[in-house]
Amino acid sequence: MSGLSLHKKIEENAGLLIFGILFVSAIGGLVQILPILNQDSLSTATENTRVYSAVELTGRDIYIREGCSVCHSQQVRPLIAEVERYGAYSRAGEFVYDRPFLWGSKRTGPDLHRVGGKFSDDWHRIHLIDPRSVVEASIMPAYPWLADRDASDTGNISAKLSALRILGHPYSDEDIDNADADLQGIKEIDALIAYLQMLGTGYSEGDSS
Amino acid sequence: MADLPSGFWSGWIIVLTLVSLAGVAWLSISIYFSKDAETQADHEPVWDTDLKEGNNAPPMWWFWMLFAAMIFSLIYLMFFPGLGSYSGLLNWSQGSRVADSYANYEATFADSRQVISDASLEELQNDLDLMATAERIFTRECSPCHGPDGRGQAAMFPNLHDIDWQWGGTPEQIEQSIRQGRNAIMISWQQMLGNDLDAVTEYVSLLSEGNNQSHAGKAGYDQNCVVCHGPTGDGNQLLGAPRLNDDTWLYGGDIDSIRMSLTNGRFGVMPAFDQRLDDVQIKLLVALLAR
Image (cartoon, rainbow over all chains, first blue to last red; front, top):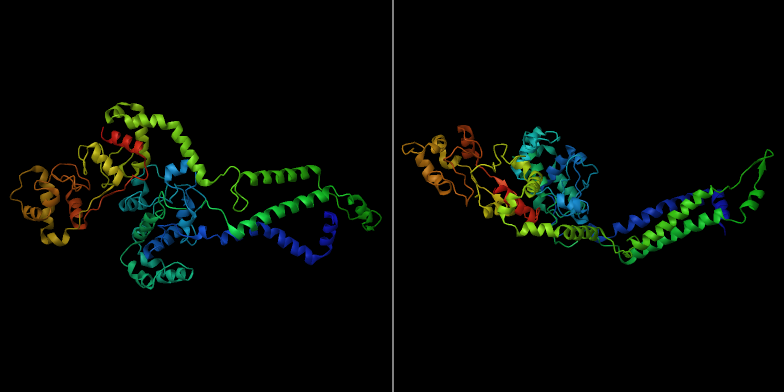
């Protein structure tokens, strides 16, 4: 059978045409997506990667709410220039507890994946309230309201943890019971700093994969 | 990360990729070079004397583009990982690319880095070019806290140019501070001092003037503060306790700032840079800061 007679046959059978279109357009997904969904090594946490605590998860939600990922990526690419500037390049297994991941696609500010431990909490506090007071040339906006608002007002944290547990994140009953208490008495800025300080700490040089 | 799919899914990828590639090749070749293309056109129905359906293949340059793309895919799949668990003739991976870059970097700069490793601090300090390099490292890694000129800022991050060193100013102590970081712990003294807080605040602010034997805050100071800051406020570099009897103040020397320190405590943190900088970079920074 030549291509032309096949063409004629498909052209004259709408059902066959629909099936053909679906099949051809599915090939890319069948080759690229399906095997990855079944590749455990990509969805296995690296040695030191752990679930976010209630405070860190709240900080992460604030990070999302304030649009930090619009200007800051969270992916150190495997290039020497990036490794020198930011630290070890990002591994797939570090993001298994990120829903959704915040890799970002734009670096107006520096990448933040390895920012954890690079600055002191005090520095982050000053810098978030007034970036220019520590980095003169910074173009980052100030976020002074984070220091006034209570972290517990950002949403029902125990419900969030329960939902994540359904998705397979290993939270214990105790984690969920204590979640609300953990947020008492701290401000949004504290939660955000806790999140920033644990960013990128799930991998260190020499870990496997 | 660098690992490739294995087992069944590896075969799945290989078969689907090659079969669809072959399918596209067969389809395009058979359409462009079909013998019956013209004869088939003759059999098409004709309406209104000259209106008829036909199969005209797209222009030939289009075919050659497609053909070149297929050849490129094959060559690419031969050299680079793409076909399941087959890692390609070049054995390329993201990790090996970084490793290669570092090997190349090492080969290019090994000599000049060795010179720095072998040099004494004094030699480094006299080399203006190297000090300019050290200043660039400082700007990148240290200036967010210590300020672009290293003179400290935000009434919190220490000035690195003055004579006072909270954790010691010898090259060894500076290196230790950079490598391991420092954690200063001054707890809140509000509970312990109680009503004495104001008196001790004032006493501390007057330490630089010497003889305050009769001051009301001395008793409270001697009881609580001496352990770290010393009887005359000399401080203790082992604990990172700052000198209190001079006019250099880490967190501000006015009464309000001192009261704030006593009330809330102070927990200065210098992060560890052992993982972020290599030995040569740290040595250059030590030379710059010990200058």
